[in-house]
Image (cartoon, rainbow, N blue to C red):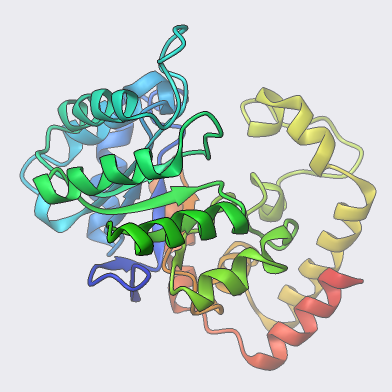
Length: 312
């Protein structure tokens, strides 16, 4: 397993992380605990969750799993998603963050969070209020580093410049959707992150499973998959254009002897701005496949040919 710095922080994370969005929703506690223990066994030390995953059960499962091994894992969680029906039960206000960080610490059964991320940008709260609150959490030792998720380039820039101007703890990372099929971040966010040395933590690296090859053109969506649970996501992804692109990617992978899933993750890892790729898994076998991508080194010629395929 390769380990990379988390942005310009001093923290090192496995280049392939474990996303736990399915903990507590599609996975029971024992499955979740066993998977985290297996992750550590194969060198995956970066575990990503959020206070809303599995209606907070994801954090609870992780809390059960890390007993006795907390210092060997890097735990990242998020705040700002809805945790109730009230007007103050979501967002980036001081009150919401302070309440939710205590809840996350309790569920995770730890006294600190390695990376605390704002899940989404909030237009209702001034960014300096959010950043001052996060800065205090770092100073108190409850949080080691801070980051953001789903921010646009201008939003991340606003946060970084506000931190600099007020001498506050800055975001060290940003977590966007990024895959061979979704390259929107490459126009503005990627060069921004490179300039400001923010580590990128791509999620949905396999386009919600599409790049595994398990979906077939013209056939029903398999039961239990993400596209069955979120039909609109399936409609957006299961297009003739995407299937045409996948066909070409599969030919390339076959000709070069690259396993498809590993290649899709390695394509992201070719970019040194990527600190860790957040890949979900439900079984040890799936996690093993994801983790092997850390050892696959695509060449510049590979990347040029793949990018030509993706741009055609």
